[in-house]
Image (cartoon, rainbow, N blue to C red; front, top):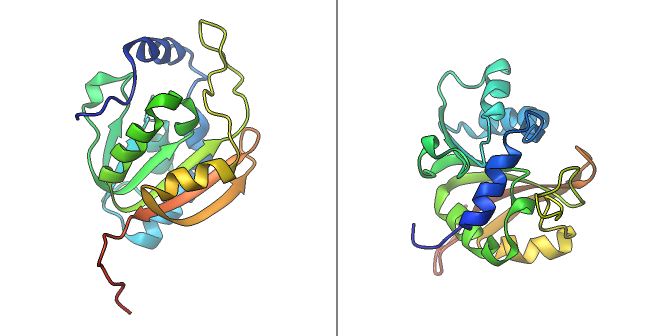
Length: 187
Protein backbone atom coordinates (compact mmCIF):
# COMPACT_ATOMS: atom_id res chain seq x y z
CA UNK A 1 0.00 0.00 0.00
CA UNK A 2 1.59 3.22 -1.11
CA UNK A 3 -0.70 5.80 0.52
CA UNK A 4 -0.74 6.15 4.27
CA UNK A 5 -4.19 5.66 5.84
CA UNK A 6 -3.29 6.27 9.50
CA UNK A 7 -0.48 8.10 11.27
CA UNK A 8 1.68 6.31 13.84
CA UNK A 9 0.46 8.67 16.58
CA UNK A 10 -3.20 8.10 15.78
CA UNK A 11 -2.68 4.34 15.52
CA UNK A 12 -1.37 4.42 19.10
CA UNK A 13 -4.53 6.35 20.13
CA UNK A 14 -6.75 3.76 18.44
CA UNK A 15 -4.97 0.91 20.19
CA UNK A 16 -5.63 2.66 23.53
CA UNK A 17 -9.31 3.14 22.67
CA UNK A 18 -9.65 -0.54 21.75
CA UNK A 19 -8.58 -1.47 25.29
CA UNK A 20 -12.08 -0.30 26.31
CA UNK A 21 -14.48 -3.26 25.89
CA UNK A 22 -17.27 -0.84 24.93
CA UNK A 23 -15.35 0.67 22.02
CA UNK A 24 -16.41 -0.57 18.61
CA UNK A 25 -19.85 -2.00 19.33
CA UNK A 26 -21.87 -0.34 16.53
CA UNK A 27 -21.45 -3.22 14.08
CA UNK A 28 -23.75 -5.43 16.15
CA UNK A 29 -26.60 -2.97 15.55
CA UNK A 30 -26.05 -3.02 11.79
CA UNK A 31 -25.55 -6.79 11.45
CA UNK A 32 -29.20 -7.42 10.39
CA UNK A 33 -28.78 -4.94 7.50
CA UNK A 34 -25.49 -6.60 6.50
CA UNK A 35 -27.12 -10.05 6.69
CA UNK A 36 -29.89 -8.84 4.36
CA UNK A 37 -27.30 -7.56 1.89
CA UNK A 38 -25.46 -10.90 1.99
CA UNK A 39 -28.70 -12.77 1.28
CA UNK A 40 -29.91 -10.41 -1.47
CA UNK A 41 -26.61 -10.10 -3.33
CA UNK A 42 -25.22 -13.63 -2.82
CA UNK A 43 -21.91 -12.24 -1.61
CA UNK A 44 -19.35 -14.93 -0.93
CA UNK A 45 -16.70 -12.73 0.69
CA UNK A 46 -16.83 -9.89 3.22
CA UNK A 47 -14.06 -7.53 4.25
CA UNK A 48 -14.78 -5.92 7.61
CA UNK A 49 -12.76 -2.69 7.28
CA UNK A 50 -12.15 -1.42 10.79
CA UNK A 51 -13.14 -4.80 12.25
CA UNK A 52 -12.04 -4.00 15.78
CA UNK A 53 -12.88 -7.00 17.95
CA UNK A 54 -14.78 -8.70 15.07
CA UNK A 55 -18.20 -8.18 16.64
CA UNK A 56 -19.78 -8.04 13.18
CA UNK A 57 -18.66 -11.62 12.54
CA UNK A 58 -20.17 -12.96 15.77
CA UNK A 59 -23.43 -11.13 15.04
CA UNK A 60 -23.56 -12.50 11.49
CA UNK A 61 -22.90 -16.00 12.83
CA UNK A 62 -25.90 -15.62 15.14
CA UNK A 63 -27.97 -14.53 12.13
CA UNK A 64 -26.91 -17.66 10.22
CA UNK A 65 -25.29 -16.08 7.16
CA UNK A 66 -21.62 -17.06 7.53
CA UNK A 67 -21.63 -20.73 6.51
CA UNK A 68 -20.50 -19.99 2.91
CA UNK A 69 -18.96 -16.59 3.58
CA UNK A 70 -15.24 -15.80 3.57
CA UNK A 71 -14.81 -13.25 6.39
CA UNK A 72 -11.73 -11.01 6.12
CA UNK A 73 -11.15 -8.65 9.05
CA UNK A 74 -8.95 -5.59 8.73
CA UNK A 75 -8.03 -3.06 11.39
CA UNK A 76 -4.69 -1.27 11.75
CA UNK A 77 -5.05 -1.52 15.55
CA UNK A 78 -5.01 -5.33 15.14
CA UNK A 79 -1.99 -6.06 12.89
CA UNK A 80 -2.58 -9.80 13.23
CA UNK A 81 -5.52 -9.43 10.79
CA UNK A 82 -3.14 -8.54 7.99
CA UNK A 83 -3.74 -6.11 5.16
CA UNK A 84 -7.20 -5.36 3.76
CA UNK A 85 -8.40 -7.68 0.99
CA UNK A 86 -10.89 -7.13 -1.83
CA UNK A 87 -14.32 -8.68 -1.31
CA UNK A 88 -17.80 -8.89 -2.79
CA UNK A 89 -19.06 -6.94 0.23
CA UNK A 90 -16.95 -4.42 2.11
CA UNK A 91 -18.36 -3.19 5.42
CA UNK A 92 -16.99 -0.04 6.99
CA UNK A 93 -19.21 0.46 10.03
CA UNK A 94 -18.72 3.60 12.11
CA UNK A 95 -15.12 3.97 10.97
CA UNK A 96 -14.98 6.89 8.54
CA UNK A 97 -15.80 9.52 11.16
CA UNK A 98 -12.70 8.35 13.08
CA UNK A 99 -10.32 8.86 10.14
CA UNK A 100 -7.78 11.67 10.31
CA UNK A 101 -9.20 14.36 7.99
CA UNK A 102 -5.94 14.75 6.04
CA UNK A 103 -5.95 10.98 5.32
CA UNK A 104 -9.65 10.53 4.46
CA UNK A 105 -9.04 10.63 0.72
CA UNK A 106 -6.39 7.88 1.06
CA UNK A 107 -8.81 5.70 3.04
CA UNK A 108 -11.62 6.20 0.51
CA UNK A 109 -9.19 5.38 -2.32
CA UNK A 110 -8.16 2.20 -0.52
CA UNK A 111 -11.81 1.22 0.07
CA UNK A 112 -12.47 1.76 -3.65
CA UNK A 113 -9.82 -0.86 -4.48
CA UNK A 114 -11.49 -3.34 -2.12
CA UNK A 115 -15.17 -3.11 -3.12
CA UNK A 116 -15.68 -5.60 -5.95
CA UNK A 117 -19.49 -5.73 -5.79
CA UNK A 118 -21.00 -3.64 -2.99
CA UNK A 119 -19.96 -1.58 0.02
CA UNK A 120 -21.95 -0.93 3.19
CA UNK A 121 -20.71 2.09 5.12
CA UNK A 122 -22.18 3.76 8.18
CA UNK A 123 -21.03 7.17 9.30
CA UNK A 124 -21.93 8.73 12.64
CA UNK A 125 -22.36 12.47 12.21
CA UNK A 126 -22.20 13.79 15.76
CA UNK A 127 -19.69 13.70 18.59
CA UNK A 128 -18.57 10.43 20.12
CA UNK A 129 -18.96 9.67 23.78
CA UNK A 130 -15.22 9.00 23.97
CA UNK A 131 -12.23 11.31 23.73
CA UNK A 132 -8.63 10.89 22.71
CA UNK A 133 -5.80 11.30 25.22
CA UNK A 134 -5.24 14.87 23.99
CA UNK A 135 -8.88 15.79 24.68
CA UNK A 136 -10.15 15.71 21.08
CA UNK A 137 -13.43 13.97 20.41
CA UNK A 138 -12.94 10.44 19.04
CA UNK A 139 -15.03 11.42 15.99
CA UNK A 140 -12.49 13.52 14.12
CA UNK A 141 -14.94 14.22 11.28
CA UNK A 142 -18.42 15.43 12.23
CA UNK A 143 -20.09 16.45 8.99
CA UNK A 144 -23.58 16.19 7.45
CA UNK A 145 -24.47 13.91 4.53
CA UNK A 146 -24.18 16.88 2.13
CA UNK A 147 -20.45 16.97 3.01
CA UNK A 148 -19.97 13.20 2.73
CA UNK A 149 -21.86 12.61 -0.53
CA UNK A 150 -19.44 14.38 -2.91
CA UNK A 151 -16.43 12.76 -1.22
CA UNK A 152 -17.95 9.28 -1.50
CA UNK A 153 -19.07 10.01 -5.08
CA UNK A 154 -15.47 10.72 -6.07
CA UNK A 155 -14.68 7.03 -5.46
CA UNK A 156 -17.99 5.13 -5.71
CA UNK A 157 -21.40 5.03 -7.30
CA UNK A 158 -23.66 5.81 -4.35
CA UNK A 159 -26.69 3.50 -4.66
CA UNK A 160 -28.35 4.35 -1.32
CA UNK A 161 -27.81 7.03 1.29
CA UNK A 162 -30.23 7.04 4.19
CA UNK A 163 -30.36 8.36 7.73
CA UNK A 164 -30.12 6.05 10.72
CA UNK A 165 -30.68 6.69 14.40
CA UNK A 166 -28.25 4.13 15.85
CA UNK A 167 -26.12 5.72 18.58
CA UNK A 168 -27.37 9.20 17.80
CA UNK A 169 -27.66 10.16 14.18
CA UNK A 170 -25.76 9.23 11.10
CA UNK A 171 -26.06 7.77 7.64
CA UNK A 172 -26.02 4.32 6.06
CA UNK A 173 -24.55 4.26 2.58
CA UNK A 174 -24.57 1.46 0.03
CA UNK A 175 -21.97 1.95 -2.69
CA UNK A 176 -20.88 0.16 -5.84
CA UNK A 177 -17.61 0.34 -7.75
CA UNK A 178 -17.25 3.43 -9.90
CA UNK A 179 -17.98 2.72 -13.56
CA UNK A 180 -14.91 3.12 -15.69
CA UNK A 181 -14.95 5.67 -18.48
CA UNK A 182 -16.43 4.28 -21.67
CA UNK A 183 -18.21 1.46 -19.87
CA UNK A 184 -21.85 1.10 -20.85
CA UNK A 185 -24.50 -0.36 -18.57
CA UNK A 186 -26.08 -3.46 -20.05
CA UNK A 187 -29.88 -3.74 -19.96
